[in-house]
Image (tube, rainbow, N blue to C red):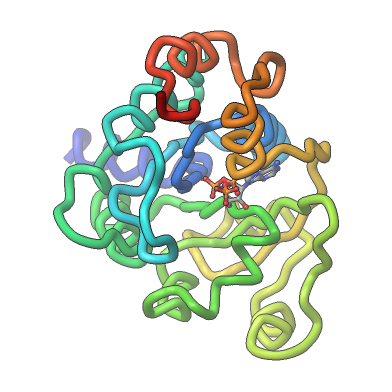
Length: 225
Ligand code: ATP
C-alpha cells in the first residue's frame, strides 16, 4: 500500500516537458527554449523526443542515428534534459498522438506539457488526430520570431476553449490547457543551419561545441565531394 501510494504521489509531482522535433540538427534555439520553459513552468524534466520518420517532411538529411547522437551530445551537460528515443525505435511514421498516448499510460496522473514553437503550433491542425493531443497533454507554445498567436479558425477556437494564462493550471491538471509564452528569440533554424554548412560556413556559436564537433567529423550537411 505504502509503495503504491509512493508511486502515485511521485506520478502527480511537477509536470514533465516533452520537446519533439526532427533536430536536423539540434541548435541553441531548441536548447534555450527548453531551458527557459523548464525554469518558467517548473518542469522536473524536459524530455527531447527526436522523430524517427517524420510525417510532415519528405525525409531528414541526417539519419536517425546521427540526429540522436547530436541530441544526446547537446543535452549531456544539463541533468534536467533527457532524451527519449522511442519514436526512432518505432517502425514506420511516428505520430505525436501515439507517443503521447504511450507516455500518458506510463504516467497516468502526471501533468505532461508538449512544448512547441509557434510555427509548429500553427501547423497543429495538420497533425494526425490533433484534437486528441489536448486530452493527453497540455500544449505550451513558445513565441518564435515573426509568428503571431492565432485568433481565428480551429486554433483560435482552441485558444478560447483551452487557453490559459496560469502556470498553476498546468500543475493542477494533467492535460487540456494551452499556454503561450515568449522566450528569448534566437533566430536559428535547422534549415538555415544546414544551408550555412552547405555554403562552407562555420556553425560555431549556433550549436553546442559537442554538436559542432560531430558536424565536422561526419560532414553530414557538407557539400558532397
Ligand atoms: P527546420 O528548419 O528543419 O524546420 P527547426 O529549426 O524548426 O527545423 P525542428 O526540429 O523542426 O527545428 O523543431 C522542433 C521544435 O523546436 C518545434 O516545436 C519548433 O517550433 C521549435 N523551434 C525550432 N527552432 C526554434 C527557435 N529558434 N526558437 C524556438 N523554438 C524553436
